[in-house]
Image (cartoon, rainbow, N blue to C red; front, side, top):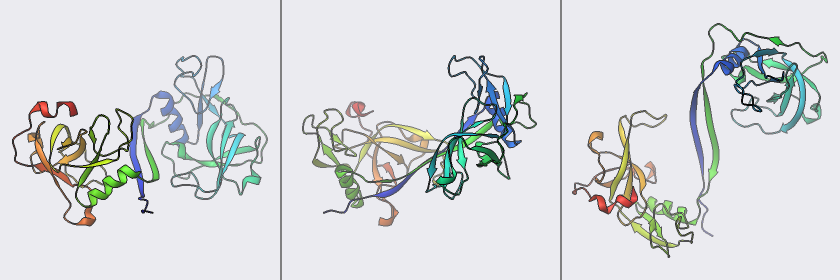
Length: 317
């Protein structure tokens, strides 16, 4: 049997958001070892707080300080913690209804094993030694020896130097295995060729191939070599430098319709000032100098040919 291609793949980006008055008070409170909720018109206290009542959509502003102690309402044991999780050793995910709250907060419980965890057990917050205004200021929960419920009461939500924004990294790690069509596409790139697949019904050639025609819904298996030259159908100028990408800004990223293809792929345009890139520009691939440099063109550069007529690529924009 042929070797099944697979490779680790990481999708990661930082999500930056500003905070309204409720979330700002909540996160700033965690920095100050204070847990805040918000009270609804019918007297319920929601923790974590939200800016609008989930039942009535009414705006919520009345903040309440709740206790750092509470009761586990449900739980699940995590025997193999992953990167970025609260604890590096096995722990329990728990929903904790803090004293004074009517909803539960999801966090980690530091326990020696699943036999030490139960619904209804009393727990308390373990604060992180260094806090900056994030949910991780609660390092985790730990079992509490006290059955006495903590007190709650109104809070102004005012703190010195409030947290007004956060950066939440989003990351997905997984192993990717291409199917038959994409495996053939990748193997051809290793030979510095680009192949697509033709639909037996509409006869369109799709690059990269998907194994099926997105228009007709039928399987494709006829391989067709396309390019190597192509036409810029549309493009954008990138002015923000990406993390771990050694390319100086500004640069141009374009959709390129390779000769013989009925679907444009994307690639970086080089060898020409960014403000001279245009629709219809004829380009060709520039491959890495060594085979270990990658399985795809480093960028595309002008061929020197006259620009393509708009009618030849307008359907691929």
